[in-house]
Image (cartoon, rainbow, N blue to C red):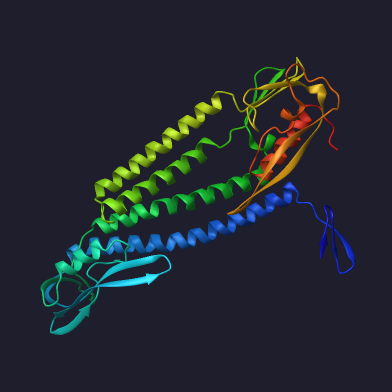
Length: 369
């Protein structure tokens, strides 16, 4: 197969390469987000259900009847895989209920292996082979028995650990709903906020990221840091106060980032301003511009939407860039270079970029080609 810029030759036939349009990109993005949201919800939901079931059982076990038992086996098990080594306590104990013998290998509900060996060592040291123990068993199902009832540090750690996963789950559904709303409502200018300060001046807010999205990312990062602290400094067994504190700090960080983004947006540095009375267009401080640049509307021949793909070792990413097509030889004013005036802003979502480009073309009175 031979390729050139616009055509592909295969088996002696010439085929025109299809161009990726914003509509196709938006449809592809919606399909991807839908699949991701469904998969992530199923994945996270299973862990949520398991964690809350274990915590519920741990709390319920406080009211279980008790009986005497004896430890039959107690050792630290090691499992090696590509991600490293995990440690778990293998504890088996025997007990009797109404003359019938039972065995159980769960000293707590939902205990799993950890990369930190301290929790497994603690359990094995506490319950050596031959030790007499108090067994808490379910009267409806005596085989369901443990040695440590009540909610503890490992349960709190799982609540903290699942927090960023649940945030991503909620964020993916919020993004999908936004995409659906855009398709249904088709908001003006791709949904960017338009302020008509007077009959002649129009200001468009083009934030790099919305305050809500920034707050969401900040909450995920803050929670992830608290998980690392709980893992390395508390042996994956934090107190309930630490978990509440981590959630509170994450909320405060998210609120602070949200307010900071709102302040940045309010500064107007990323605003596009159209002054119809003076017939000028002021470009935002984006695409390498360190200051607002104003140029005459008469110098603009068209507004095109360009797709830019960036490649890295981790893969590729695409952005959509509303771009000004300037009239050749037109005087743009003092200290204004044409190359600084072409790219308006980089937008991640194709549907927003497409809507904004169409609106700007109409607002400037440029006929659609």
